[in-house]
Image (cartoon, rainbow, N blue to C red; front, side, top):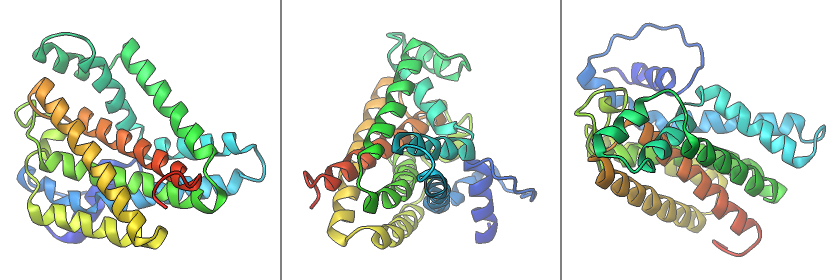
Length: 255
């Protein structure tokens, strides 16, 4: 697969940006686009940052932050947070493995999913609202950057819970070490532009450990990962980065 096609495909897959280019790709080559996920994350973060900048002098900080978060969900079609909610519905249903997978596939949201979604968004808004001005733009960029890298990591260390079915099955368990390292390289290059080297390493270490732990926990419960659970890992990671940047902003961690 040509790299430019892989880049375009990553945007078509991960966002709702109207790129009307038909790309023919073999199912077995689909996973080669994942190394560009962090680049997609940077674009999502840039849009959120621009939204915040555009409205920060018009509305209170909390509203400006909320609009920035909303813009990122609009850009991605809310695909990751939808997976986050579905994951909670399934995992906390206290059903069998097969039934949990069925619940995750159901388009209807249950109480567990709604509560998880609400608390996630509230926590993101609160943390971002209390981050100092000199760090808010970096945080809005780093959250989706690390979030998309966590998807690569989770898909690399796991297998498909649905036997390769679904969108998640196109990449879960199929990512090569080279693709993981390329995704890491891009994440590192961008990360170094926004935070100091030691801070970046701490953000990477903490977020990766948490993403890995969540992936292994989910895999233990349902026998692998799905597209929904990859979205959940992304959302967890974004919240972790927001939390860590808040702690750095208050000089309670990372400094």
